[in-house]
Image (cartoon, rainbow, N blue to C red; front, side, top):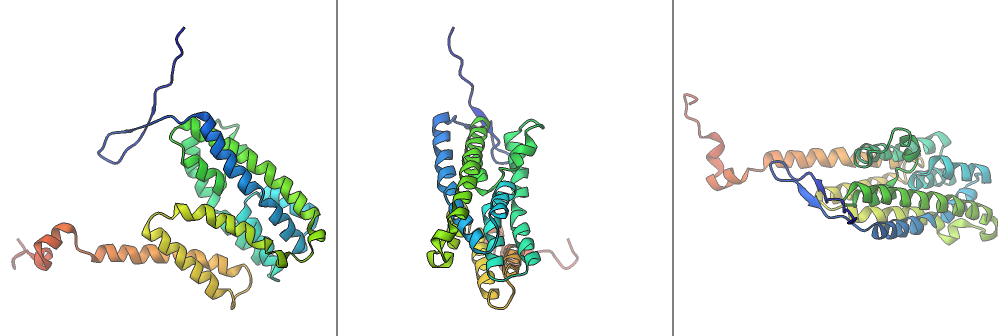
Length: 268
């Protein structure tokens, strides 16, 4: 009996255009890419374990954060704020709002993956930056599911194992600030984020957010600058929106500056 091959899946194209046919990607290639991301990022859990233990959290608290929270940037934000002497409630608030982004990832991934209802609560634990990046880059639903599963499983296992090792070895390393391990997590996060900033608006928003955080860091309690840096998004969107409204359309540019007011005195 001849082997049947699945037809290429179609992806919706631009409005008014025809659907774009997505070429299938070999499963082995998806697994290879997913493992690369999962292993590379998962090993940085060691830095979190060391940093968390150095900030005063116990071994149980450190491991619980990785097991239950499992969102690296928020975890680093929390322990970083605590290590800087910030209020625990402010530190927790900063970590919470930083982790809210995962809920928006979930809205997109739920449509793309279309998992059974029984699996969705379990899959929600793995909705993070890395799994989202790998999943959204796949051309078909099958490849997206494989990428999400392999990235999530690899990263979850390695992150928690290396968190445990880092927390246990914190005493042997001594002063974590001297090693600069607290910068490992943010560095990995920025390395993943940078390629996603494709438009000018996205780059400007990121730059304004960085400037806000750095400018407010010396004058506000630890954790608060991270919260306020989120204001960069609405500010940039408002300014770019006003710029588009003020700019003439291509037709108006060709017809001249008086093309907007060509009606006669009687209004016709």
